[in-house]
Length: 556
View 1 (tube, helix red, strand yellow):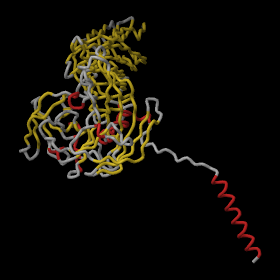
View 2 (cartoon, helix red, strand yellow):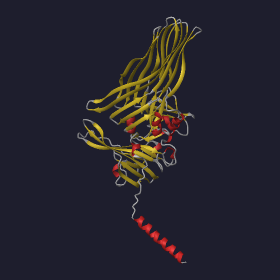
View 3 (tube, helix red, strand yellow):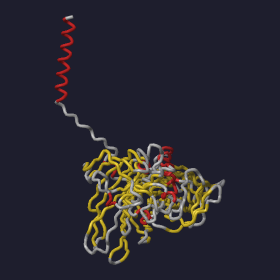
View 4 (spheres, helix red, strand yellow):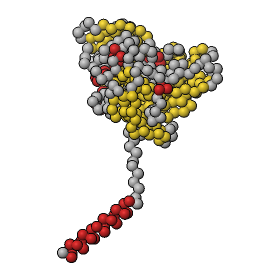
């Protein structure tokens, strides 16, 4: 009994010692961060709003679990320079619950260096009846850059029965002659609600910033059918298409244009035909900022849709990997062909900023490629021939946070050759690794002089090569020919900007009885097309690099 009592007393004493020590230790509650600062710098952000439709959740962006990233911009306007970003904060808003009475959310704000400057774990925002008056946000715990209100009074039936989370998007008072500041909050859906598998329900990326409010739709997220008329867009009738209404905006990615719906014909049981007119991204979204960097697969994994990611997982990171033979001549006494291999990649670094009266963008595009073109001639006759033929047009269409970006590279093969031979067995040509780089800068704006723009382009190319040079002949052969590829890379961003490049990569071969030589010849050109509401222009083609170099010479 004494031992038991002693044991109990020792246990109680130990408990009090542990309790006393632990009471002196302060354990900070770790801050739960739903989006690290580093993930907020890149991707796409735009103006407008998001929809909650309790009667049809299949078209709702908002629900429990929706995670929204944003940029909170303090803008400065001066008569001389127009608007510019004076301060930029980043953050996110996470929806805990939402219904017809209001929305409960948490939010976090970083400054431009990544320091957390505000965090609210839970705040309830009661619904405003049809109002978009941001001055009504009197609760200091509310995020003052977003307003939850009903869609009452909006013509579009998709919106009128629902509720909107509208993000602040002030415009400068240009009649005010002095400098002044205003505010824009741009957003993107980072994560869909728990009841949905997509961030862009029925292809809708946002509710427009325009008046009246409308759907903004990315056609690549639906099943679009080819159509000969540029004023029509046709979609297959599937369960994923929205109920289109007049005034809806559509990124027509099949035709690289931005359109507004002016008529809807859904009498066909298998398709919907929309009559459309030209529209402009800045009138629908107000402001669009897009930043991406990396090879195509990296960009898709970071910012692409669920469908984009599934596509990226099913292919290699190369835009194209292809091997094929081109027969030049195939006769009993003479056979000539070019054996080709091509591996082509794409790497993009892009900054894009569009607003109602100002646009700027700069980008660097790299298209590293491995080319192999081996000329094979066996025979005892001469010949003369030439041809250019299209061999491929690899393209990748992705949606960067809902905004369409298309990379396409039409490729042609060309050759022209004259040969005089008595008897020859030849395999001759390079395997060459090229690393071309194109860089552009372009801007456009409205100022005292009206609308105007300018562009600047540069480029470079590096290469290294190995060779196949099996040459055996009798007599005095004379072979003179050119062969190679022509690349036409183009990047279309948001149906607004398209830098187009042109790059022939050719080889000039000369073989006679004393020497065999091979020259490498290439040029790079870039042309930029802009399609803005206030400024449409195609900047002239500019040569950004040119190189002719002997890369092989052998005397017999």
